[in-house]
Image 1 (spheres, rainbow, N blue to C red):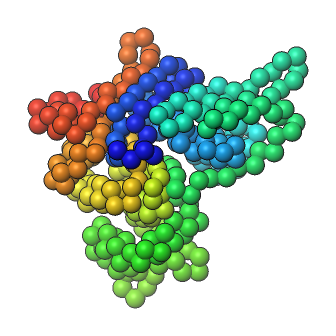
Image 2: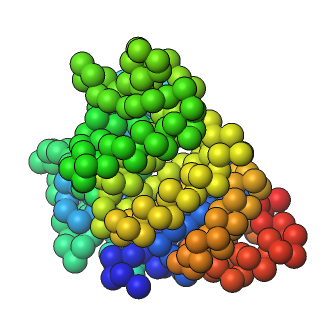
Image 3: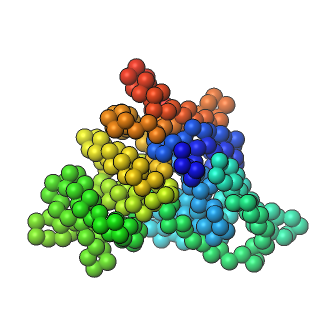
Length: 319
């Protein structure tokens, strides 16, 4: 197994997780379970853990996960500063096989300090001296259920261009919608060609943006990590096999570890079916469940266990 892959994680005091542990993750990992059981929060904790390589990227990950949750409020005019986002992330602890990343706020006798412990570094700084500067690691991407912004798609598309694989994305889009002939960046806007006209992707359904976001991010995240919330958003169930075929083959080719969430039994079935067809055993299915005491556990099934569950018609969504 590639040494950069996240195979296990411990999460404490983060959102719905008080003291959570899970292991057995593979190259591609699908996460299922009931609503509000922590599927997205689990991915956010993993994202923070792998992103915390420098102080700026750690800050960027904390800011990023709060920004994604506040998308609608921000679009509606609500103003949130970087300081507010960071302080809302107080008391987070993640420890994996590749990194330890924790953040807390100390307030002693009126002196308030941010305490960061990450990547074998320990930083304690007075909030009055903190710059709130942030950055992101290019090989790590988190796609929320809104998909990527145009600027992110444009940036990610360059990774496809560098490999001269534009035709690959065009072929995928044509299979998704046979009226789409090509994809281009025109006037700094992602556009798809139908007939003799290029239209901005905002003119299409959510599925087109989501598909473009996934494919361009796979290329951008070579030797890194891709997190996809609600992977089947806007995707008809008849097209799921094609999506999983793309993710499994490209992630293997470019050495990308993928985590994705779903509510759909059809999506889980498709995942199992395509991994079996491709004989790709470097996959896991993570079923999140809430116990009677309120704690959350993750049942991690490898390729064989998932196939057995599907064959025996066991419930895999966590219902």
